Image 1: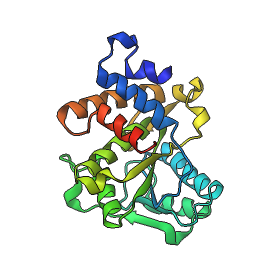
Image 2: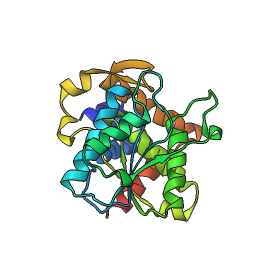
Image 3: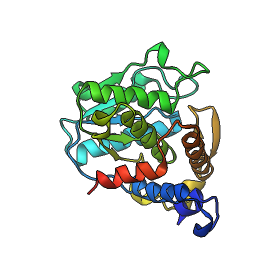
Length: 241
């Protein structure tokens, strides 16, 4: 019900557009995905310092409990959190300390040409390069780990990047592993806690951030920067059947 309220900005279902309803359904599926499958590659997204630990912990937990002893883990290969967050070295060392084999870690280096118009890396540019890395290595089953409020948009940006290269990208299966245990998502205290986001530049409750993320997704879809929620929902269902 929390996700339904967030996606509809508190409106009743009858007042929501088909795309908003599809986004609600997709949100629920994404936050409850986390299936135990044999993956080729899992990417831990770049997050602010306060949220990065959750993604690292999730990666370590998955590697240990599901015995992912051959899954390659990717992290951003630039100092993505210079504005108050973890460096790539700290993230890497925490994953190794948690038991992930160093030989399975890959830094995905981002060329200067990949930055956004303001000279910064964004989720869109990040996931476009991750998609390129996935295709260059012929990975067919991949996972995404992000902060819970950022999981849905990270997933959609990766789907968009994969879909825009054609059939080779559209056939890649993408699975979601949000950066906290699944049973925390409906707990009010978790969503009302304040945290940093936008690489540590802004702060707000996780619920407020999630509302802003839903708004961004719809805005980026209307601009043509993301595939439609209806198309993404169809992709999700196809690859879970």
